[in-house]
Amino acid sequence: MTLEENSGENTSERMESVAQALEEVLSAALPQGCITVGVYEAAKSLNADSDNVVLCVLASDDSDKHDVALQIHFTLIRAFCCDNHIDIVHVANMRRLAELVGGAKAGGEPLDLHCVLVTNPQMSSWKSSALGMLQRFCRDSRRWDQWVPLVHLPER
Image 1 (cartoon, rainbow, N blue to C red):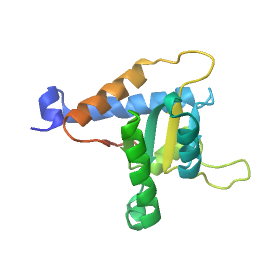
Image 2 (tube, helix red, strand yellow; image 1 turned 135 degrees about the vertical axis):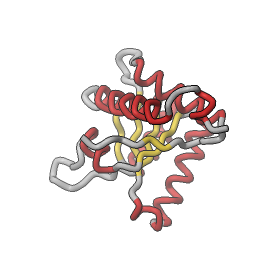
Image 3 (cartoon, one colour; image 1 turned 90 degrees about the vertical axis):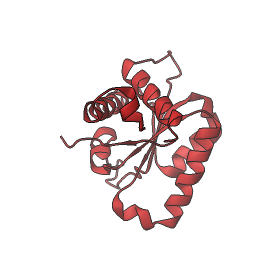
């Protein structure tokens, strides 16, 4: 039995709501400065203050499957997040992710969107129903041995 069969929800409806929740979380965190973008930047942030990280988004396209260095980074990040009880999702639509978090640095150089961390702001306790939905989705996925569930961000 799969997670979707057990939850009693229509799979496509559930995945749409999870994708919307992820979009909401990223959109709310970005203006608050609660987003860390890039594999190396994420590794530094995880090393410095992993207790503040509430979500890790790993992203790749089909062309990234053969990038051995990236796959090693993903393995290490996944292991660290699992050891530190940080929820992780995988996104296969990097173009949509770029639209959500901004696809370029100030000089026009593209961002490394392979890893995006969402952190709590320092000033207040940031809670949202979208984040709660993502956390429940990750918890339910782990219960069915899907440690890094795939979320399909729809094109807009």
